[in-house]
Image (tube, rainbow, N blue to C red):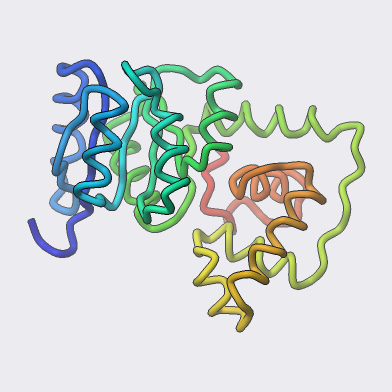
Amino acid sequence: MSGDTIRVILADDHAVVRKGIREFLTEPDDIGVIAEASDGDEAIALIEQHRPDVAVLDIQMPKRSGIDVCRHVRAQQWPVGVLILTAFDDDPYVMAALQAGANGYVLKTADADDLVQAVRDVHEGKSALDPTVARKLMKQLAARSADRPIESLTPREMDVLKLAARGYTNKAIGAQLSISNRTVQGHLANIFDKLHVSTRTEAVMRAVSLGWIPPAFSELEQE
């Protein structure tokens, strides 16, 4: 496996499903599945051992769910992209996954090319949302803030949000704007508060829905 290969750990409790997903992911030359897990505890152990670039997780697994695994990864601050791959598009699952820190949420009905692109996007620090999920999330965000005033962002907060929409990490945003990581975190906290959201993905989608960021500017696919 070359140094440019995206190293992936795949976790799903169905061996047949894992086999199909692995075949989809490894068909291109730039993705390699380095380990597979059949439950949440095994997924955490493999992620800790191998520190992959991306972990592709099912939601419903024995011992720990994919959402629990994602929370653990974020709590440990491991630099691993998390892509939820599931059959469930229910709003509570989507919101729980995003709030746990997942970088993407793709349905198992997605085409092979879309799944491969989602892994690449997550590896690059971008958000990857299934179009069906993105539309539902946009509607939910609109309904949630319908009776709550949206505050305008400062020019600096808008700069931070635009870079976040491009998939920049906090460190990269800080370097681009010549500000500290702590300052970036503070700006993001203010953005979340003003837009009544709790994740970067929600913030970017809210900004798109408000017309503050054109859809083409955001890395989130809205169509």
